[in-house]
Image (cartoon, rainbow, N blue to C red; front, side, top):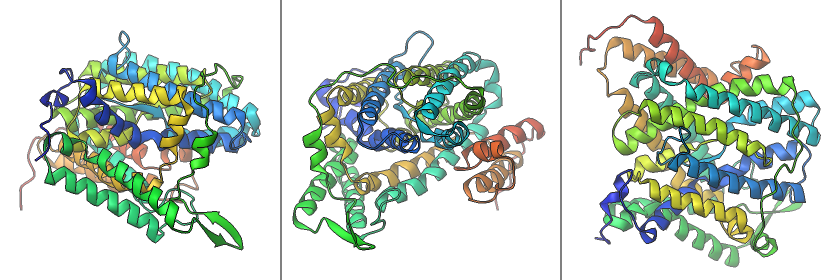
Length: 464
């Protein structure tokens, strides 16, 4: 059942109409919209840039414009820059930790935010340079290594998806029945439309689930109590749609260049460059997840190199508009893995929509007030599918004892150490910044190291 889908959406360069591409591209933007803005809100707040201030609004607006432009460069390519793959770019949450450290070192304030931006400009250029020379390093990233990285990315995001499912980070009604109801409703709708229908309806099941969840949240906001008491103070429930933000948003606005003066300080530049090396490994994992999950093949040298270069150059471009580093979004890797839709024009249309959100703040506000729990219903599926893509990559090679050892040590020790709070507290600050948090980086480091030092062994593990 369902309208027949254009089979070209499952190819990189097949011809797809705007009418077909718009809802499919919109799925990708809804999946990453909140994640694109959250890091900026967090870091700006730490630097004393008040919520709702003119400067914060300008930076948020710029973030949408930058993400749209960098996505288009990644998808369409600009010379050697861009992997020409269905990758959505946005503000990276991976840089929150190092940004916190820079803020502490610089003493906070807008000066610290400027130092983060100055370090981003330099670090982005460094990553772009690294991407240019990625081809000779490709031999260090066989499927067992890239698959381990992709699997680690998926595992690290599953907890993020569940937190969205329960209402989002830091909300007072985390795990409330309303949040769990909305997320579960969206999840059920997605699974129903994905498997009960075929063709276009099945392919847009995530969009359908999110839109219905949004509508139900709007109805709940109108008929149910909107606030509850916390220590004697009224707090708005996280699933309530904040229509005042839409009313107060302007109809049209142009992005502003250099809203914050760039500051170049070696204390900020050095740790930021290290993080750009780290994010290169994650980008390689994302690209591998895209090609494996959507195209059922390994990424080429040109695709990996162009994607890493776009990460770097895009981040440098972002710093000129007061925006934090822009990298590939793992949410969208999971979406490609779920739907199999890899058409570049679809993502191009999504990138244009994201660009429009920056130029038309009222449109952005409508998307931004979507409850986290609505997104969480879709996120739990998308993030888990990234882990599945990692498993598919790992099993592309023979399951030898050598590969089993690389996998279990990388995940058991590397991912375990990095993802478990408190295990690295006695190590130097720099080590904690790089290896703590998600577990992705230590897992990748262990996989790279073991792949280099362990002798080749083609003997397959005997099946029990």
